[in-house]
Image (cartoon, rainbow, N blue to C red; front, side, top):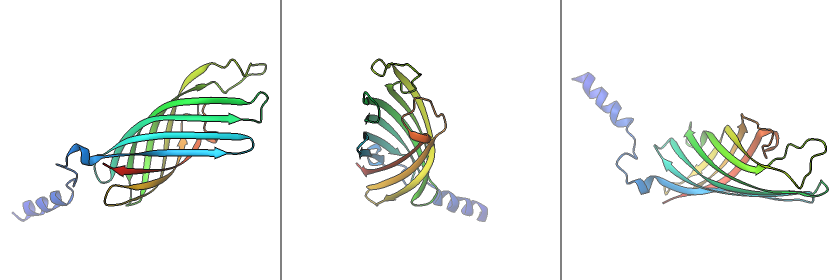
Length: 176
């Protein structure tokens, strides 16, 4: 009887507090926004997301993204739009520290030029990006918060728009 009582106490402690909550209360929305204006390069990124809290430590989600970049270091100026979508899984090791993997598919103009190529006649290509990394998130009891993350693209496609295959992201979210 003592063994069963101990097992019962352990099961109660490890139970998911989200169990039984309506689907809507486990959903969060947010995303990230990136803007950089300089004398040579302009970059804008808008990436909304929709997520689901599987447990207090694990969430999944995804969403579309749009990026615009212009590089005036070339003649003619290089300019492109990038469309994409991603899905992620995020696991909290501690209250604020998380690890994350994210799979992203991007459609963009080919940027791996060869000598003699024509900047005006670039083909659009679809590339995969697989990020692994982690970050910091400050969350409130109401489900709102922000995150900062650093991730590395393990695929490293030659047409990737991410310099050195590393990306820094800052974003926010709110619970529904």
